Amino acid sequence: MNSSVIGKIEKAKRYAQERERMHLTSFSVDFKGENDDHKVSFSDDKWHCSCDFFAGYGVCAHTMALERVLEGMLPVAAVSHALERA
Ligand SMILES: [Zn+2]
Image 1 (cartoon, rainbow, N blue to C red):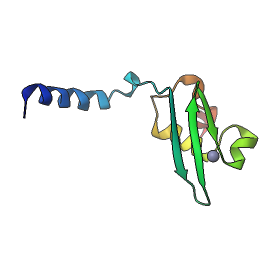
Image 2 (image 1 turned 90 degrees about the vertical axis):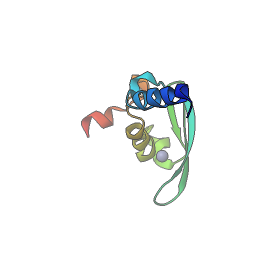
Image 3 (image 1 turned 60 degrees about the horizontal axis):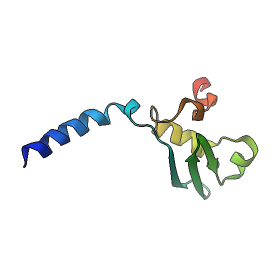
Image 4 (image 1 turned 90 degrees about the horizontal axis):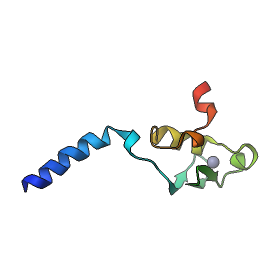
């Protein structure tokens, strides 16, 4: 393999361990819940989920699960305080 590609692979491995380098700005996720499928999206530092619980509380198991998966890459303003207490 080309030595410059090998160098990039090594750098990618290091970057993958340094999540704070990556700042997520917007994305959408099809989330398969226990009872139903949900659409979760994130933009402008705000979450949205199509589930009923989110409509009432502004946070839900789906957004909190994604906060855990994406730990270190979300804006501080977008991380729910529920995670700090749990
Ligand atoms: Zn939800």
